[in-house]
Image 1 (cartoon, rainbow, N blue to C red):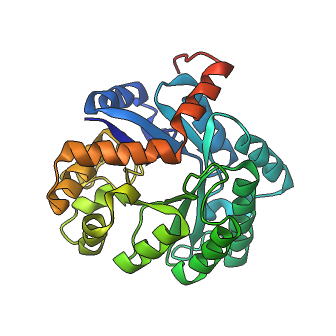
Image 2: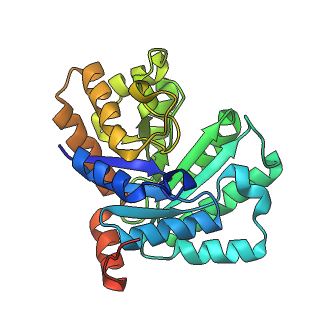
Length: 279
């Protein structure tokens, strides 16, 4: 069974003690690949280093809304440079977070909009974070999607709504704008009825899966660190909800991720730069 975790932060210090073992467990679980996302310049550079060193790892570069306040012009210059790196498949993690407001709202808006423009410029999809900011974020994404006719220049979707927490109606609206919907391992929680409805009712061609490692472990590992191998539990729950075989859900969500991230093109470009090495 092939799996793809579309959202991880395995460059986090929480994996410093067993990163190689964790990656081995992911391969044993059937992961064909995973996307490692940055949240600022330094973590984006670390994501690229992991993509360079590890087979089946792709990188994303971006500034999370929590860190928007730290984006000075030298940071923008470096982030723009990273966005053009062939090992970077996605611009992310970007978005708005009005729940914690660790950066001022206006700063978040400026940084988010500028990164949407950067994604359009480099023709790469985005991974969007949204928490308690839907009324503000959706119109911005809608306008951006209309400007790009709902697809990247090569016909791929515009991106993925990470850790989706909205209802089925909102999910369908994002799909119409050209986005995949990411079903997180929290779909296994007993009280996750709204997310479970999204996983059950959306067309399988629009779904991808994620762990957001090291955050948000599935029900079987509540209170512990999440890791990419556990994405299999999200797939199993989706299959149960839909009454479909797990291997069918796994293959479909993996193919969706590979199409969204242009896996063949990204891996070929990265391989041409440098052969994998250990870290």
